[in-house]
Amino acid sequence: MAGKNTAVFGIFRDTVSVGGALQALRTAGFRNADVSVLIPENAGTRDFVHHKDTKAPEGATTGAASGAVIGGVLGWLAGIGALAIPGIGPFIAAGPIMGMLAGAGAAGVAGGIVGSLVGMGIPEYEAKRYEGHVKSGGILMSVHCGSSELVSRAKRILEETGGEDVSSASEAAADYATSDRS
Image (cartoon, rainbow, N blue to C red; front, side, top):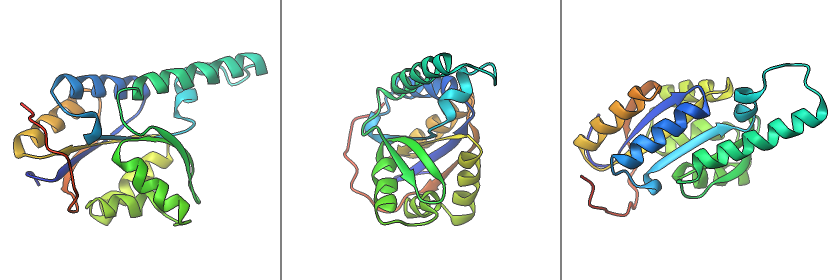
């Protein structure tokens, strides 16, 4: 699917790849308001802890460092926040998906990720696949695109920067700000 009001989705395995994708999207002219990221809260520590037998002070330092790195990676995005999805756990989210997931969490909706992704227009079978990746520590990124050319560009960027299971889906009708993207 490609065209107006299409989202491109991909799964990343680490915050370094997410940072590269965000930088490439920014350089390519995508707006921060068009990019969403969903990171399991434990993803940052997975990237930086080298020994399972770390001591408490070192663990605290590692946790602080990973929080700073995740904050730095997501710094360009709009609406960064932490939230808990009932039955799934704590997450750090940024972009339009933050509002959808926060609403699902506030309403106590089970399956908040699937419901939010389906609400964005993703077919349920793909939404369940993405939720499975996120539950196992993957980082979900989505990019809103307003033209077929932008869909192709976003897919290429996500794939070249380490995105897996990159696909696109028509989004549900939404009020997106217009911008002059080249």
